[in-house]
Amino acid sequence: MKSLSFHRSPGVEMKIEICAAPFDPMQALATYQESLTGLRGRYGATAVFIGAMRDVNEGNSVQSMTLEHYPGMTEQQLQQIVTSAEQRWEVLEVLVMHRVGTLYPNDPIVLVAVWSAHRAAAFEVCRAIVEGLKSQAPFWKKETLSDGAQRWVEKNTAG
Image (spheres, rainbow, N blue to C red):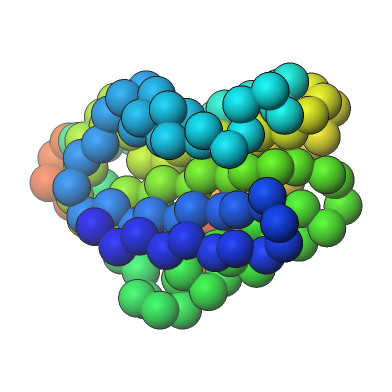
């Protein structure tokens, strides 16, 4: 698991993790939120998105998916996506966890959590990060279909 933490200004942090092993998003969220002792009393909203692998894509049954990435470039792009969203709305903390490797239906792929003083900013930043992940992050997906055939995913689903 590769984990990067970035500190931008007093009290504002982001943590990005690329995970090669399965993770429990609810446990990761609870553990991370417990570590936010400096934010207690400062945030009034936490927006969370958890994305999981589906067992159907483009009308075909999918038994597994392999997510590939380019180490270094992927983390840098994720940092840019988060920073871009944070420049538009005021937030206190961001956590992004994204799986790579082989996944199976219902496996969590991504966790995005945003802490802010107010719900509007938390929702907007969370959505902007998720949409950025889907359209800008350098992840490549290869599906294995139920008949054993493999194919690269050429486009993401619409947001």
